[in-house]
Length: 303
Image (cartoon, rainbow, N blue to C red; front, side, top):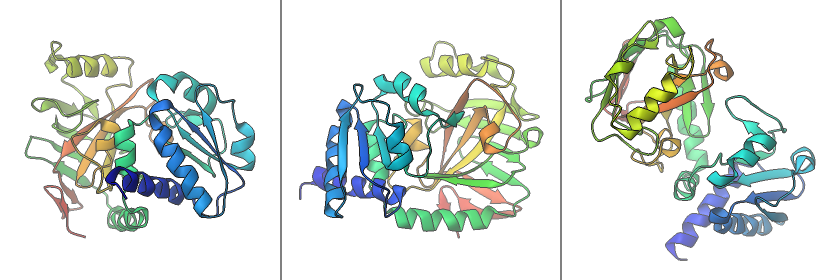
C-alpha cells in the first residue's frame, strides 16, 4: 500500500475510534473538496466493518439534523465552509446545536494536519492521556518554564480531556509570570519568541507587541477586542505523538511534549472569564512542575 493510502486508512480508522463502535445507523459524511480522499477512505473503512456510509459534498449538502439524531455524522469541512459549519453546528467554544454523542467534526483543520493527528494510535493516545490526567488530578499549583523565557505559575481548576490535549481553566487571578511564545502563533512559530508579562492573570504588556509583524499585529487585535480578551484562560498539554509542533496552532497544540496557553473566553471549560475571542499560543519543550514535582522536563515526560 502506498504511503498516502496507508495514512488515509489509518486516519479513517482514527475517526471510527473517536466515534466509538458500534456507531449508530447509517454514517453520513459531509466533506469539503480538499478532504474528499479522507471521506472516501472513511467510506471504505465503514464498509469493511459491514456498515454503510453516505457521502455528501459540501457546501451543497442539506442540514442533516436527522443524521445527528438518528445516525452518525462526520463533518470534514474546508475553511471556506466555516460560515455554514458554525451556523449549522455551532462552535466548540460557544456550545453546539446538534447532539454530539455520534458526531465527529474536524473544525476546519487543514487537511495534512488532520491526516497526521488521526493517524496516531488512538488507544495509545487515550491511555497516555489518562496517565497524565491522573498525575495532575490533585495538583494545587503548576509551574511552566521554557528555555525561551516562559515562567508561569497558576492554580488549576479541574482538568479536562479532549482528543489531543489535557487542559484546565486556571483560577484567573492566580496566574503570574512571563509568557514567551516560541511555538505556534496562529499559522506557525514566530521568527523569535514573543514575550508577554502576566500580572494578576492578565497580559500586561500589549504595547510590547511589534505591529510591523503580521502575527503580532493579529495578536494585538485579538487581545484588545474586549475587556476579557487579554485574560489567561487556559493551560493545555498536548498528548498526540503524530502532531507537529511547528504546524498551525490547531495541530501544534496537540503535539506531545508541548503545551499551550489560551487567552480570552473560558466559560465552557469551567472558567469565569467571558470574551468574544479565544486565542491559543504554543510553547515548545516545556518543563512542567506540579506541586513541586517535575512531571515533564524540556518536553520529555517522567510518568
